[in-house]
Image (cartoon, rainbow, N blue to C red):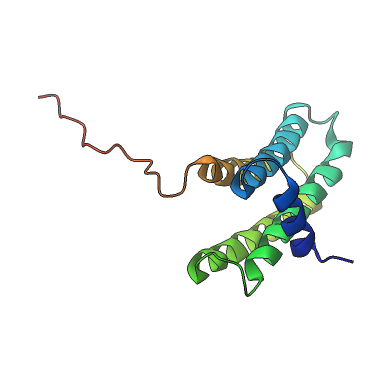
Amino acid sequence: MLNPAEAYGKTAKMAPGAPRELEGNLLIKAASQLQRIKESWPDSKKELSGALLYNRKLWTIFAASAAEDNHPLPREIKQNIANLALFIFKHTASVEAKPAPERLDTLININRQIAAGLFQKPGASTAPSEPAAANF
């Protein structure tokens, strides 16, 4: 049986597009599930545990993959992924303990922000190349 990181690696190789695109799409899927639950609260409250479980599994895979010795990312980025995953796990536990729609915002925003970064081309700058001219 494959561990989560190995299973992810195998899936990433078989999926169309780059692994970054796959990761971004999975994060958007998780964020969309949580957003839908938030917007339909309290009717969708029964779906919360499944969506939180999906998000937690996704971050478990990211953390396990980054922890692999042969993972190509720099050590600092791998550590950042691990720290972010720990935060996700703690926040998820707090949401499970005290469910409230506004408490989903943190998970939704993190997933969307990380996905946005993954959809950018590596090395592409998000800042304008020329400073904006001041209007005096």
